[in-house]
Image (cartoon, rainbow, N blue to C red; front, top):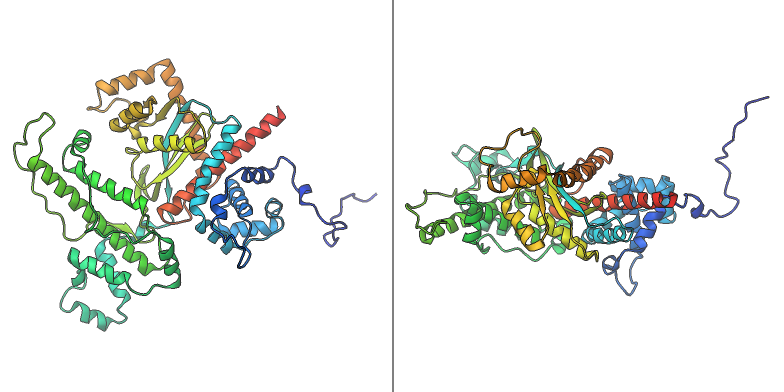
Amino acid sequence: MGQNFIVSRREQGFLLPPDVREWLPADHLAWFVIDAVGEMDLDAFYAAYRADGHGRAAYEPSVMVAVILYAFATSVRCSRAIERHCRQDVAYRVITGNLVFDHATIARFICRHERALAELFSDVLKLCHKAGLVERGVVSIDGTRIAANASREVNYRLGQIAREIVAETKATDEAEDELYGEDRGDELPEELRTSEGRREFFRQACEQPLGEDDERLADESEPEAETEAEREYEFDPERIVTRSAGRRGWLRDASRQLERRRWERPDPIPRSRAERLLLAAQRLEEDLGAERAGNQAYEAYRARGRMRDGRRFGRPSDPYQSPEVPAGKVNITDPDSKQIPDGLAFVQGYNVQAAVNEQQIVLAAEITNSSTDFSQLGPMVSATIDELERAGIDQTPEAVAADAGYWNEHHMDEVVAHEHIPVLLAPDKGGRGTPRKTWTGGRYEWMRTVLNSEHGRQCYRKRRQTVEPLFGNTKHNKGVSRFLRRGRVKVRAEWRLQMMTHNLTKLHSHQLAAARA
């Protein structure tokens, strides 16, 4: 008797029309994503298309959203990989109804609707709340570093940027010799040695004809931003002096105001290297303008102000001469990214933040290019409350837990006073056996006493059980160690897509467990 096998007949055609409902089990993640998208508010997507139906037909936005969410939920982020799966993966063919999306179509849809995609986070959170996964309890806040789509080797100073811009317009060595004359050749061009000259140079460069891609970016961007000379800074001496006395406090406040304006009016990252060089140079000029504004405000405060105890300053402030040329560096591939310490090394990327509840549901997901978590406690608590309100959830966290990197007394006081949420925050890092020399007594000892109590240890221990596994799953299991997009707006949308699909998979697992119980 011969061997007995089930024979595959690849040449056999379908005897009856296929029904995709029979291709996947009823509890498959693909069906769950389709049903979840049906519950979401997609008006922002449909509003981007003509209502009269004229023009070439577009793919149904709900189908595109379902494909993107399922792809991110299954660790597929590249548009070319999504196209490949649409051709050969049964689950994707079920979602698309046997349509195959071109990778360019997918990429353009994400670029066109990146803000709307990011705002779907609240819709997913609402679904989690309906399933009972958003309950009042301890919310853990933490951050991790994820590399940007940029190299550390292209962090340039203004001199390097200027020489490359000039070199773009010079084709031969003879032209360079004529440009530099008797100089060494590494000096800044004459027109870039003063603030007025740099502003005029940038203005003329921006008036040059743009390519097709750059015209599209210009049309999609916000109205023309104000120049550094027109930008005004407002300083609150009471808040600055209370938080950090000295010149550095004023410089930090000016930098914070500049960073907030960049978030309110983000610059699109051009494809053209020449345009990115120009944008990088403008960023350095803005940083120098913020430094000068902070120094001028500090000098004015010292001239007319008083110390904390009400006495006048005994002597004038130390003289400070701001540099004529910006001294910092900026990445010419992704100017929004920064060099951020990550353990014993530095990573060119972003500091991503997440607020997670006890059911490991992400309540808020934001990004920053700040190198530390020192100033993130207040913004993340506010973001959490805003997300809960947008999702229609009328409850606030029972408490907020964070590690020692978030220790900021000003933020802690604001959270307790304005939001009425207790803060559990370790004053000492986990590897530190003894407290810091200056971190003793007062609030520090009180917080150590709270965390050493039985209830305090029980609540604070939940941080390691919620937010740490989230980052481990995202970076190790899903392989999200580097962003694929550039610019703060695009990176934020990518991070929120990662976190909302994490919530979707948690919700799917919860429903499967409930059905089997």
